[in-house]
Length: 365
Ligand SMILES: Cc1ncc(COP(=O)(O)O)c(C=O)c1O
Image 1 (cartoon, rainbow, N blue to C red):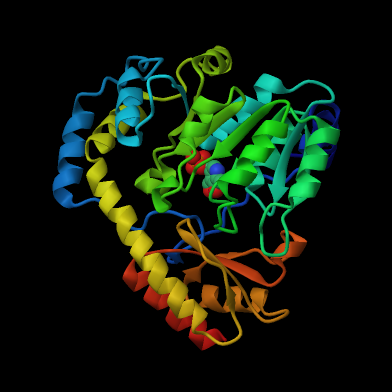
Image 2 (image 1 turned 90 degrees about the vertical axis):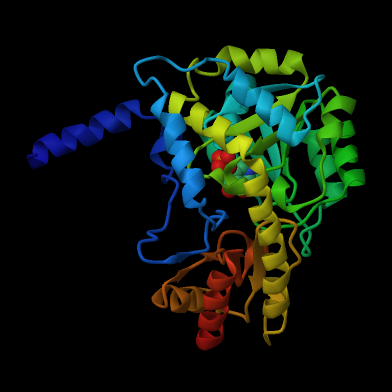
């Protein structure tokens, strides 16, 4: 392309792409080639060969020439069964829960409307607010990552948010805020409160009952953390009247035939995923203990499949790079939020992966 053509392309983009989008960066995913990958809260375990074989058999019967079942009714029924979703609640499915956050934002977005959440929190709430032209507002957690109730309630009163997102357990801090506080938020919020239970396989806490109890509560879940991150299947659970509204803007065939067939298969074998996530919970306890025994680290308890820890001042980036040089990829959160100064987040992997991480960590400290 000539320099002139390049300039005029730049002008066209500037003219037609919204400034909010031009100033954004695309969601960055670190290159994990050859790495022990402990950065993205994935389940480290594969399926046994026999299960893979019968999954392949299932896929043989999928018709790629046909559009998928638009409602994915079979998948929804199986999700109801494995997650004990009551008949009083309906489900809308998304291409990962990320798509459901976008769908919620699109459904309420209008000039002057606000999405409120807490930070440090899940980055997509902010990203999607920007794209959908919702005003993004956040309230900082306290230094020990609890909800700052006076400030949160005051911001709810002031901002009158259309949407409040609270992840339980919270990413990247791994903690639960407690039901009493959730109820106070729900009762104060004029609009929808979405409890994002992405990490539900790793905690006994479950707030599905709040969607039955309150008119303004929805619960969002995903199969990603249970062991199906590659499938991209999220679900939003709530009163059928809310769900009917969201169904109007869901793109008709957002869950493809391969995803539906694979989800049906995986949900039939959900006991395998449960065994894996229970193992991850055990490994989390070991990893927490080992990290806590290392001098100079502050480690937070986690109800999720990752652990947040703080290094000594100014060390986080060096440690992150040192680990990377040893082929261990975790997440450096230093700089992402003032409360995350010197913090790193490691996903709980298999016993061997955690051991390799700890060995490398001890070597770089
Ligand atoms: C709190 C929270 N919600 C939602 C998601 C997105 O999950 P999905 O893979 O279903 O898009 C994540 C992913 O890390 C998350 O941490």
